[in-house]
Length: 157
Image (cartoon, rainbow, N blue to C red; front, top):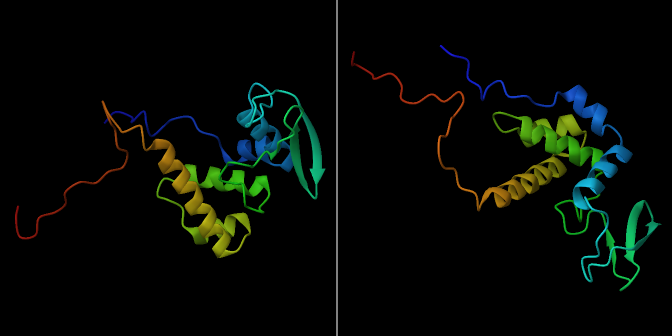
Protein backbone atom coordinates (compact mmCIF):
# COMPACT_ATOMS: atom_id res chain seq x y z
CA UNK A 1 0.00 0.00 0.00
CA UNK A 2 1.37 3.42 -0.96
CA UNK A 3 2.03 6.11 1.60
CA UNK A 4 -0.79 8.64 1.80
CA UNK A 5 0.68 12.08 1.01
CA UNK A 6 -2.05 13.83 2.99
CA UNK A 7 -1.12 11.91 6.12
CA UNK A 8 2.51 13.04 6.00
CA UNK A 9 2.05 16.75 5.34
CA UNK A 10 4.53 19.06 7.04
CA UNK A 11 3.16 20.69 10.13
CA UNK A 12 4.33 22.78 13.04
CA UNK A 13 5.41 20.76 16.07
CA UNK A 14 4.35 21.96 19.52
CA UNK A 15 7.94 22.84 20.43
CA UNK A 16 8.36 24.86 17.20
CA UNK A 17 5.02 26.56 17.85
CA UNK A 18 6.08 27.54 21.38
CA UNK A 19 9.41 28.86 20.11
CA UNK A 20 7.59 31.06 17.60
CA UNK A 21 4.54 32.09 19.66
CA UNK A 22 5.53 31.38 23.26
CA UNK A 23 5.38 34.95 24.59
CA UNK A 24 2.78 37.68 24.49
CA UNK A 25 5.18 39.93 22.56
CA UNK A 26 5.76 37.27 19.89
CA UNK A 27 2.02 36.70 19.48
CA UNK A 28 1.32 40.42 19.30
CA UNK A 29 4.03 40.95 16.68
CA UNK A 30 2.68 38.07 14.56
CA UNK A 31 -0.87 39.40 14.93
CA UNK A 32 0.20 42.91 13.85
CA UNK A 33 1.92 41.48 10.76
CA UNK A 34 -1.15 39.41 9.90
CA UNK A 35 -3.66 42.21 10.57
CA UNK A 36 -1.77 45.06 8.92
CA UNK A 37 0.79 43.50 6.54
CA UNK A 38 1.47 46.85 4.82
CA UNK A 39 1.38 48.87 8.03
CA UNK A 40 -1.57 50.37 9.87
CA UNK A 41 -4.48 51.60 7.75
CA UNK A 42 -7.35 53.42 9.47
CA UNK A 43 -10.62 51.46 9.09
CA UNK A 44 -12.59 54.73 8.82
CA UNK A 45 -10.59 56.97 6.47
CA UNK A 46 -7.81 54.69 5.15
CA UNK A 47 -5.13 57.08 6.42
CA UNK A 48 -1.81 55.37 7.12
CA UNK A 49 -0.47 57.44 10.01
CA UNK A 50 -1.43 56.60 13.58
CA UNK A 51 -0.34 57.26 17.13
CA UNK A 52 0.01 54.40 19.55
CA UNK A 53 -0.96 54.57 23.22
CA UNK A 54 -1.74 52.20 26.07
CA UNK A 55 -4.85 52.10 28.19
CA UNK A 56 -4.61 49.59 31.01
CA UNK A 57 -2.78 46.65 29.44
CA UNK A 58 -4.12 47.13 25.90
CA UNK A 59 -2.40 48.99 23.08
CA UNK A 60 -4.51 51.25 20.88
CA UNK A 61 -3.90 53.15 17.68
CA UNK A 62 -5.42 56.54 16.96
CA UNK A 63 -5.62 57.73 13.36
CA UNK A 64 -3.58 60.87 12.70
CA UNK A 65 -6.27 62.19 10.37
CA UNK A 66 -9.77 61.37 11.69
CA UNK A 67 -8.67 60.47 15.25
CA UNK A 68 -10.53 57.16 15.16
CA UNK A 69 -9.26 54.79 17.83
CA UNK A 70 -8.88 51.07 17.29
CA UNK A 71 -7.09 48.18 18.89
CA UNK A 72 -5.36 45.18 17.45
CA UNK A 73 -8.23 42.91 18.50
CA UNK A 74 -11.08 45.19 17.31
CA UNK A 75 -13.19 43.54 14.62
CA UNK A 76 -11.74 40.08 15.24
CA UNK A 77 -12.95 37.00 17.09
CA UNK A 78 -10.73 38.11 19.99
CA UNK A 79 -12.36 41.53 20.35
CA UNK A 80 -14.26 41.10 23.60
CA UNK A 81 -12.09 38.39 25.12
CA UNK A 82 -9.84 38.98 28.12
CA UNK A 83 -7.55 36.04 27.52
CA UNK A 84 -3.94 36.80 26.60
CA UNK A 85 -2.90 36.31 22.97
CA UNK A 86 -0.70 33.37 23.99
CA UNK A 87 -3.80 31.43 25.09
CA UNK A 88 -5.69 32.39 21.92
CA UNK A 89 -2.79 31.31 19.73
CA UNK A 90 -2.33 28.03 21.60
CA UNK A 91 -6.08 27.36 21.35
CA UNK A 92 -5.96 28.01 17.60
CA UNK A 93 -3.03 25.63 17.31
CA UNK A 94 -4.72 22.88 19.34
CA UNK A 95 -8.09 23.19 17.56
CA UNK A 96 -6.53 23.16 14.10
CA UNK A 97 -4.02 20.37 14.81
CA UNK A 98 -6.52 18.01 16.40
CA UNK A 99 -7.47 15.29 13.95
CA UNK A 100 -10.60 14.23 15.80
CA UNK A 101 -11.89 17.58 17.14
CA UNK A 102 -10.45 18.49 20.53
CA UNK A 103 -12.93 18.49 23.42
CA UNK A 104 -13.52 21.65 25.45
CA UNK A 105 -12.43 19.71 28.54
CA UNK A 106 -9.07 18.86 26.94
CA UNK A 107 -8.71 22.48 25.81
CA UNK A 108 -9.45 23.59 29.37
CA UNK A 109 -6.63 21.38 30.70
CA UNK A 110 -4.14 22.45 28.03
CA UNK A 111 -4.81 26.19 28.36
CA UNK A 112 -5.34 26.35 32.12
CA UNK A 113 -8.68 28.15 31.84
CA UNK A 114 -12.18 27.38 33.08
CA UNK A 115 -14.38 24.91 31.19
CA UNK A 116 -16.77 27.72 30.25
CA UNK A 117 -13.91 29.80 28.80
CA UNK A 118 -12.53 26.80 26.90
CA UNK A 119 -15.98 25.89 25.52
CA UNK A 120 -16.64 29.46 24.38
CA UNK A 121 -13.17 29.81 22.88
CA UNK A 122 -13.50 26.55 20.97
CA UNK A 123 -16.91 27.44 19.60
CA UNK A 124 -15.79 30.93 18.58
CA UNK A 125 -12.87 29.43 16.67
CA UNK A 126 -15.04 26.76 15.04
CA UNK A 127 -17.56 29.40 13.94
CA UNK A 128 -14.84 31.62 12.45
CA UNK A 129 -13.38 28.65 10.57
CA UNK A 130 -16.84 27.70 9.25
CA UNK A 131 -17.48 31.28 8.07
CA UNK A 132 -14.09 31.42 6.38
CA UNK A 133 -14.73 28.22 4.44
CA UNK A 134 -18.45 28.79 3.71
CA UNK A 135 -17.89 30.32 0.28
CA UNK A 136 -15.29 27.74 -0.78
CA UNK A 137 -17.04 24.38 -1.25
CA UNK A 138 -14.91 21.31 -1.91
CA UNK A 139 -14.41 20.35 -5.54
CA UNK A 140 -12.09 18.23 -7.64
CA UNK A 141 -10.09 15.30 -6.25
CA UNK A 142 -10.92 15.06 -2.52
CA UNK A 143 -9.01 12.67 -0.27
CA UNK A 144 -10.22 11.66 3.16
CA UNK A 145 -7.74 10.29 5.66
CA UNK A 146 -8.55 7.38 7.98
CA UNK A 147 -12.10 6.87 6.77
CA UNK A 148 -13.86 3.59 7.49
CA UNK A 149 -16.85 3.07 5.24
CA UNK A 150 -19.18 0.12 5.41
CA UNK A 151 -18.67 -2.63 7.93
CA UNK A 152 -19.29 -6.26 8.58
CA UNK A 153 -22.57 -7.73 7.51
CA UNK A 154 -24.16 -9.79 10.22
CA UNK A 155 -25.05 -13.33 9.11
CA UNK A 156 -23.59 -12.94 5.60
CA UNK A 157 -20.30 -14.04 4.08
